[in-house]
Image 1 (tube, rainbow, N blue to C red):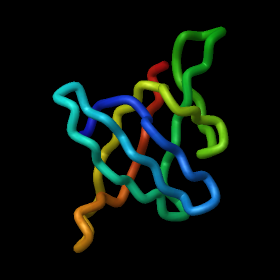
Image 2 (image 1 turned 180 degrees about the horizontal axis):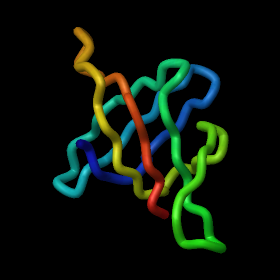
Image 3 (image 1 turned 90 degrees about the vertical axis):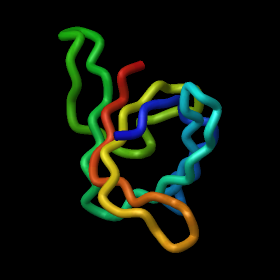
Image 4 (image 1 turned 45 degrees about the vertical axis):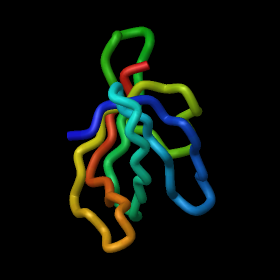
Length: 82
């Protein structure tokens, strides 16, 4: 599990850079079918969402499906807790 803030978000290419609490920057790819949950303010829970629902600066928790050869990670699921 990776926890951190979205530093950059490229919705068109389905990639983001996440900065962890210890200032590591991790490139994350979001394949089609990756589960994305976003904060639902009325219930204080989460609901299904899309990459376009996210913004730079949001705090997220990412479950990694694989580590790619270029050092990036492939996301299995993301929960936005901001």
